[in-house]
Image (tube, rainbow, N blue to C red; front, side, top):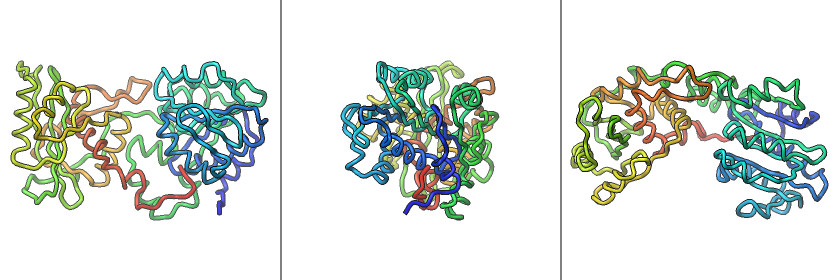
Length: 404
């Protein structure tokens, strides 16, 4: 049976405004309680009202929200169809949308809405959010939106949270400690698994700028001796360049830890020697040696090289997940938790750890595109191999029933 926390109860019974923003730590209970309140409010509105639910993608909306909606209201009251059309909440028409890029705005042009729910709103383009607010034209229309903190220059922070007193806007800050349903062991683990700017945002709930080294946690304890361990599995990850450097990283799994065993690094610009795809393939073969490589993770933009490797039929090729900020977050967690270690002979990778930095001049989370080729290859491996599962996503395996 649902027993709300004090913070959830305070939000549930508060008088809402036109814009209702819930910001704060991960696992603090904001998604759970905002979905419940949104659904109850929809049930109170006229039956001819239309509503919208938004996620960065349809898949993320499904993962983050639909399970709770079915839990709260049941399949009779919450009905989801494929695509935008035909979904219903308490008999009211419910549109569904993803807001992954600026083109998403076109999905909602012309709508007349009585309300909306926005999951992870800081991931939306600003033009989508602005268009959504113009669509809330029915009397008493409201939007409920959740997010984790981001860069303090983000439009949600500067134009809405910081101006809440000037607008018809309520801002609610939820902290990890507000969720009293979380166990002590889980809290201890999750606070260790975030570092740097991600700790400040996702644990402390602060809107802070990303500055300094991207991986300040990297140190000698992340390094390992290049000894011949009895590895159980091998993978290779690769950042491909023509004039820019090409980096290939050979990984081995031993006793639950992925070790970066060897690296290959070549800069066409620095050496004045530009290599062909065929030459890079031969370097890939040399790096692999006679090892059984379970997969090669390659920058998806390297289309011609991926095609060549597949034609050779030795390696299983996977186009890498290139989500930069998410990948950095997961790589930082893997480093902090000891899921990956770097052998001391991988000198280019270790060198880049000391140089890879955030762009302090940018108003967004942007890394300086220098000294990043081994870092990119490492991020492709961690993100695509999904080494963060069981680290960031669930810690000890305990999952709070009261949400994000």
